[in-house]
Length: 253
Image (cartoon, rainbow, N blue to C red; front, side, top):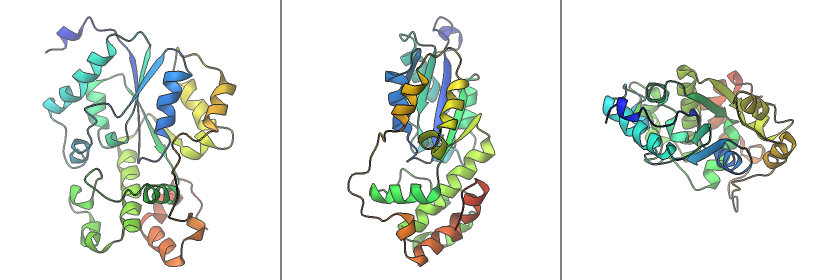
């Protein structure tokens, strides 16, 4: 199938929201589908590029991967009248060149969250490093390869948080948002995102109220909040991710 074959398909504006995970992406799917007009959203639609995206850390995407990503999304869009398609998919953190190649007009948003909160949330979801995550062996010459088999889950997830954010940083998303400025305080970053999306209609006070409610709650936490971590756990996190935390504006006490 060629680009010419797609000519009759309706044009849409497309936004892709990426992150490390544990950053409220389920909230955005619900928000755009249920509370904002002229938008529709999917969360990790097939093909989600779960493992394939990690391969793109160390190499360029192929023409096959471009169309493997593009064609199913184009086909899903054709029967939808909404102006904006928003995909929330944290597996795409290394796929920005592919996204921009497949959809030249795409708008890519990255959400960063305090690494201490992300690591705690992953551990409380019983999620450690699995084949759904990048590892140092996906990055040629990464020094963490020498420590990986000795690290505990906290250290591995600290590395994962740091590395994913730094990969995204090098690929320069169109908009960089802070989780804390979406769901806390005055929701300044949420307002900025919606302001950048032309043609949508929403009630800001309703959106603020929705953002104040947590969508994806961890059920029974077994791993304590950072302030309750033993000092050696805190030291392990800071040794791996402390510099990155400070660069992104998170205060280390």
